[in-house]
Length: 253
Image (cartoon, rainbow, N blue to C red; front, top):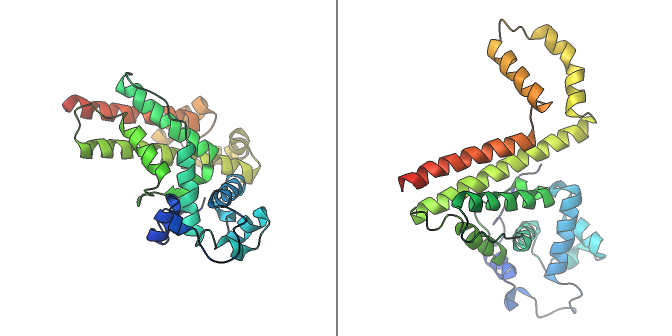
């Protein structure tokens, strides 16, 4: 998957577009035949189907039935377009009401919402958000998610760090899950078929006397999952460890 990052374009122009300020819409030139929202929707559809590798201004223009230069009337370039796409995806996320529920349930719901985001838009998992968007979708998402950790006796810095830790886990998991799907698609082999093909060679070269832990643990995991890696197991196991770590922080507060 391609590695992209948010806030890589013109910051002032990007913020104007994110918040749909009037100054972001040109007042001169031919009558506007599209909208920023239409461009974002077409780009998102293209990325959902073919990944960010296929996302170009030319292909988005083609999907909209216009020439590429027309798009630059609405969006300066791909960097700004990516910010608009991700912020729009954030704005469409379902936000579960967890008021009054135990904090573990609230945090689990936030994780599930982000998992659904990455399952709906796999390309989003490959986008670094170290430099945040600061758009309406991002801010609404942040406000909602902070509530899952509010009132636990943590400092504001700890609340922000705890949320970042949780979201980083879900994004890393989503990347690994997407890689697993891509590997199966590219090889045209399921996990079971891939292991069946490689098993004879592994039996010859992997000596349990030389690699006792690797063979014992690897065999146990493989038998349990039917593969070297199970996305579903990894998600459940990892989320439980994140919650356990946060519990230690909450109990200390």
